[in-house]
Image (cartoon, rainbow, N blue to C red; front, side):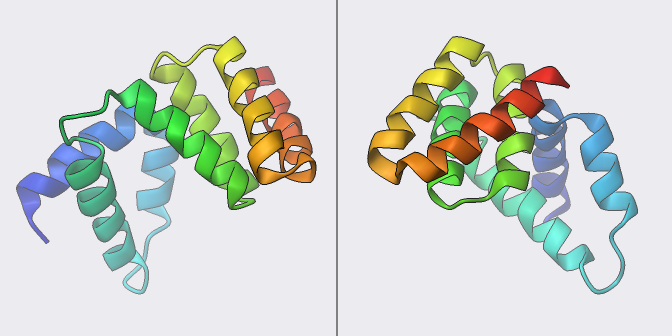
Length: 122
């Protein structure tokens, strides 16, 4: 693990997902899954999320579309909240869900709208 990359990734992860979620994830890590937490924090949150070329808002919008397509409601809910932190509006989230209905299927969008309503209500 590269400590500098981990710290940069941790900062980005906290900014997008919130301190509470990140603290809980790290608190619940044990010797079995801590290497995964380190990998995700360093690789995803530093090496990809901190790359130049796309703003965080754009990355969040892409994540929402991909998570809808992959049928990952838990991650979708988490990233909807992160998208809001990154400046994605409620109207933009709705448009992403409508676009996903066409390209990912109506059942995926139905679940996406349900999860989005829950996330927006919280």
